[in-house]
Image 1 (spheres, rainbow, N blue to C red):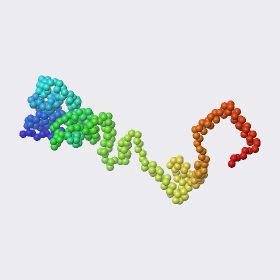
Image 2: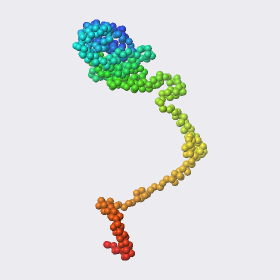
Image 3: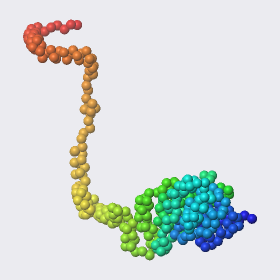
Length: 376
């Protein structure tokens, strides 16, 4: 009789002692070495991302499976992760001989897991250094049919880097034990972040988030985080003002606009009351302006200002002044322009100058004589 599969919730929430019993019982009932080894790998993933202690987890069961179970592709693929579970070199050599044809095949499988092994067994933050804070790793995955679903892991290690989370959860996407209605759930990692009261994004749209952006996001959030836990109904106006100033960004100064509005409204009210009793000119003289430019405007009589404005205003231009009449002149052709240019050059020569003088003398002589008759 096949044993019941261990659920995803059980693997990532149950305590170490009870979980060891459940996995050992599952192997005793089913002898399914592939599924049991994947259960243990899931616990290794949990151990690398959480502050909970799962060291030396199911070590005897691991040795039993790799030493005596029938070799399979799943065991060959995951075997390099369990090198430290074997005490002596002879046992490990026996395991590699049973599972792999030669050393080159083992190294090929080992190289595929090298990126994950760098982070999988690194010690996490001790519980004593968390100051009582609890965090949760929230990730979104794409399943085998392309649908997105969310997966969370409590007691997460806040110091886990984006590279570590990406490498470890990539290993989880290779496991085949997590299914729902026959569909694999963890096929492709999309997003992952560590949450408390604030968020610490680690992976967005399949890409690792820059650590500098995470530090900036964390540094800008504690102020708002502290403000959300305050009761404003019990605070005085001074305490509220101090809180608002503390939350303002650098370079922004808080000004009381109400006082400025009151100062502007006060002279207006005085002018209104004075205008009813003494007239507009006397009221304008008695009203105290808020600044010097306003004072000069109030002290001036309005009629005099209108006269000066009327005198300085320019008269309207007539149509002839706006656009004076110019007779139409036909543009000169290129031949005419060339001829005039040559004539101008000719005038500058000695012969031209002599000819121009002779023309002037003829004009003078003809001017003294009888005028020529105009042709009809």
